[in-house]
Length: 566
Image (cartoon, rainbow, N blue to C red; front, side, top):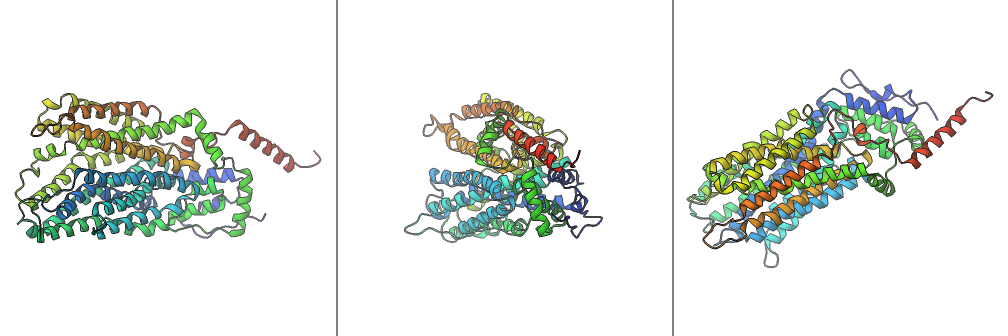
C-alpha cells in the first residue's frame, strides 16, 4: 500500500487535522485522535452554522404543529357556515393526524439514517414538510372529497417529515458538536420550537389585522359569510403556507452538509473520508476530497482492524439483549412518553388563562375580536414561561447537567399537577395562572428539553439514530394517549347547562401520576455532561466471542509482523 497523500487546505482559522494524522497507520488510533479533535475543538462559527441549519427545521416543525389549533378554527368558519365551527371529532382528527405521521417518521427516518447515513436522509424529511405544507395551503373540498379528509392526509404526510427531523437534527448536531458545549448546542436546536410557536402567533396576528375591515361586520363566527368567509379562507391558507418558507431557506444547507465523521468512521469504516469530512465541515464545504487510491486501501485495512462492532440485525439484538443497554433505551423512551402524556395537560385550562389575562373569546363582539384575541392570547401563552424555559436550559444544561434538570423538572411538575388536581375547585383564576406559567417554564427548563438531548448522546453511533427515533416515537405515542384518551375524560358526567368539565380535577391528578413516573425513569439514564459520545455509548463493549476473535486476529498479525530469525 502506498503512503497516504497529504490533502490541500488548512490555515490558522481552519487547521487541517487530516494531515496531522497521516503518519498513524492504525485506523483505530486515527479514529480516536480525529474524533478527539472534534470533541475538543473551540466553539466556532461552524458550530453556530450547524445549530442554525438544524434549528430552522425545528422552527418549521413547531410552527406547523402550533398552527393546527388556528387552522381548525378558521376552516370551521369557512366550511361550516351557519355553525362557525367544525365537529369536535374532525377537530381532534386533524390535530392527531400530525402526531400519527410523526411516529412513522421518527421510527422510519431514524432507522434509515443508521442504514443509509445521516447525509443521505438529511433534507429529505424537510422536502416532505415543505411539499405537504404547500399542499395543505392549496387544497380545497369538492362534491366527492371532504376538505377534512384532505387536510388529514396532508398533515399525516407532513407529520412524517416532522418526525424524521427529531432523530436527524439531534444526532447530527450531537456528532458534530464539541463535548464542552454539546448540550447547549442540542438545546438551542430544540429551543427553536419556542420561536416557531411565537412566529405562528405573530403571523396569525398580522393576517388578522390585515383583514380587519372584512372581519368586523360579522358579529359571530357562525355569521361570517361572503367577504368575511373569503377573508378567513385567505387567512388560513396564508398562515399555513408561510410555514414552508423557513424550510426552503434551510433545504440547500441540509442537502450539502458532509456526512458526520463518526458515521463514516464507525459504520462505513472509511477512515480517510471521515478525516477529510471533519475539515470540510469546519470550512462549510459539502464533502472532503481525499486521494481515491489511498482512501480505498485504508478502508480495506480498516474493515479488518476496526474494533467497533459492525451494525447488523444480530448485533442490534445482541446489544439490546444486555440489561444495561435495554434499561437505557427504556429510560429514554419512557421518560419521553410520560412527559408527553402530561405535556398536553397544561393547555387544558387555556380558556381560563385567557380570561384572566383579558383575551378570552367569550366576550368578543365580532369575528375580528374573536380571531384577534385568539392570536394575542396564544402569543402571551407562548411567552409566559415556554420561551424562557427553553433558553434557561440552553444556558445551564452543560453546567448543571441533564439528569439534575430532568429530576428537578419532573419533581416540580408532579407537585404543580397535584396542586392543580386536588385543589382545583378551590383555586382562584389568578392562582391557576401562576401555576400555568410555572408549569410552562419547568416543562421546558426540564424534561421537555432533556428527553430530546439525552437520546442523541448515550447510544452507539451505529444505532444512535434508530434509538433516538424509538424514544421520540414513544413520546409522540404518549402525546396521542394524553390528547385522545385521557383529556376527554374531563367531560365525564357532564350534564346540559351544568359544568362542562366535571372530571377536570381527576384528569390533572392522572397527569401528576405520570410526572411522578417520570421521576422514576430518570434513574435509568446516565449523566452525560462533558463526556464524549464514545465514553457514553460504550462502543468498545463487545461480547466475549467478538473480543476473542479480535484478540486472535491481533496475535496472528503480531506473528506475521515479527522480525525473522529471533
